Image (cartoon, rainbow, N blue to C red; front, side):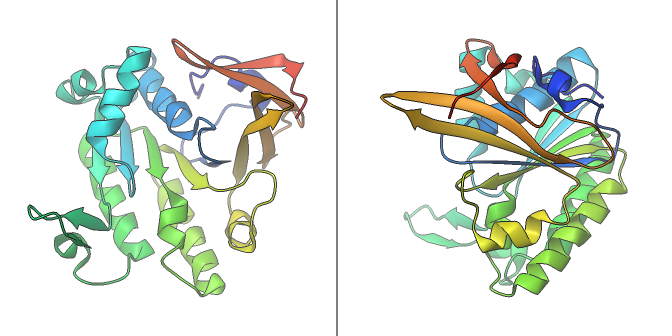
Length: 243
């Protein structure tokens, strides 16, 4: 499967297969949402592969509006049953303006991995999704203090997603240069890891991408220049980034 992000498949080396899970990690402004939506949009429009975006943090309406800057009309794809949002944000806003737990979705429990897995599996089968994004793994794992439970939960989630005929991107948030212990603990069970960089070089902000890990494939180990233009993300395989 080609992801549809120009230049990325070249540094990936081997295509992602159905059932593969890839963790996409980066800090604020690094392009995680844009990369992920581009993966789903290109799949739906170019490869006839319906996509599902599972959000635990961002408002679907905001994502729809923001992606119009690239001329990606997600609402149109939704009407054509080629794209859907699954809104599983753990909190909601009342008409009075209070922030409360989403009791109807989680019944007062801390967000369980098993509950999320079941919701995703049902929706994937219902719409015949071939591509999936979970935004974000950080929100999900942040519900727990026990790192052993987090590791087991992430492993179980990956096993559940891998059993579907669906290729998945799991978004992770935080510093790409110095991931904390929680990230390192959960990353060990993920088959593929991609880092997005957005750092300052002198007085200029620089974007870059690196494939940290891809089991069973020979990928580029380098840090490659990345830009976000009018049509989304472009990776430059021949341009090494100087961070």
